[in-house]
Image 1 (cartoon, rainbow, N blue to C red):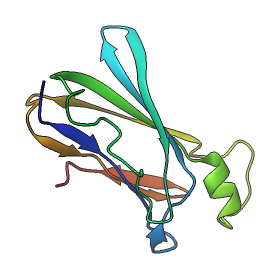
Image 2 (image 1 turned 60 degrees about the horizontal axis):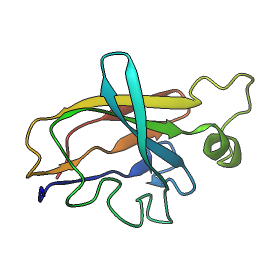
Image 3 (image 1 turned 90 degrees about the horizontal axis):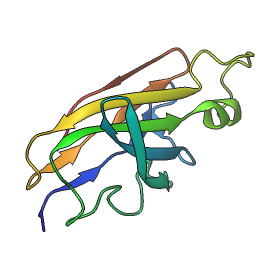
Length: 119
């Protein structure tokens, strides 16, 4: 059993606040295969209530977080558009050390986003 785990959060950089209510799905990626292994929704702090990949479940490999942002952006007061410029944001990343804490946040605005490996 590994001691590593994965966390994430979403910050709305246009409004300067956490992004609540964004559904996040986590997939394990192998070649062209995607296997959904977890799903969570951000809370009032823009975080999931628990690690999206808890201790004991993480292994080295390639993963993808899919952030479903359209409903949040629609409700946030962002200028309406159809289709929305950013509706679903995928972030693919590798985990090389299953014993470590990986933190992959999303910094979001209606027309751009960024991410990084946090702590």
